[in-house]
Image: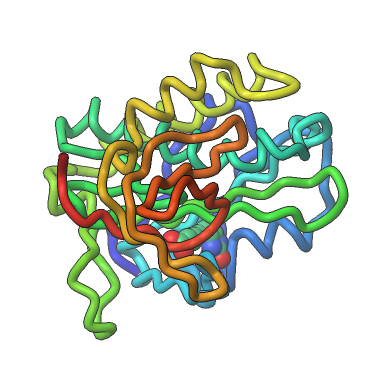
Length: 256
Ligand code: BTN
């Protein structure tokens, strides 16, 4: 394990925090443990079988990549709803992007639906899951000191590549983004507030871009990503009309 793979003090985050020496998947760790009323976090520098969106594998080089999962606890109870389920990954990613950009001054943004990017390269990915009734788990995998190698993927980057100086700066980013996220979730109940959607939209560079969206069934849509609907779905205008997309992979084709 890298010396940089230390446990950080997340004590001011309003959640019970568990640092794990290793975990197959921090999302699964929380899903398989007994839930309580309080929100809980599971964090590790050594995730051995991480899962990504659309049944993909999420690779986390030990000691260089952080896997962090949140069980929302009682906060999930009134929020297993379309607007919230679409909003959670976007809101978590926007809070992370905001904290990284404040701390590092890096050009951080979100790509719909779940990717955090620095200068168009992926620095973090988010996976939201509902393991049981009234339970919501959100996981974020963060490339901190390095990126997965050996998979021929050059589209990833890390916080370290963009000036993260040390563990203290990382701790500041984590505490800031988690507190901001919990604060926004606690202040809104039935649905995210207009100001939450505005905050998401400020960080979402997909909007206004020409995109190629590959839907889970394989359909490909090419058009302009016009807006989000009230459940965080992407509205894409193509030559054949307007399409509402709830899941898939989006590629940014060019700036406007
Ligand atoms: C994606 O980009 O496809 C989402 C990646 C999500 C990875 C995180 S790491 C913490 C949590 N545990 C997992 O097994 N996956 C998520």
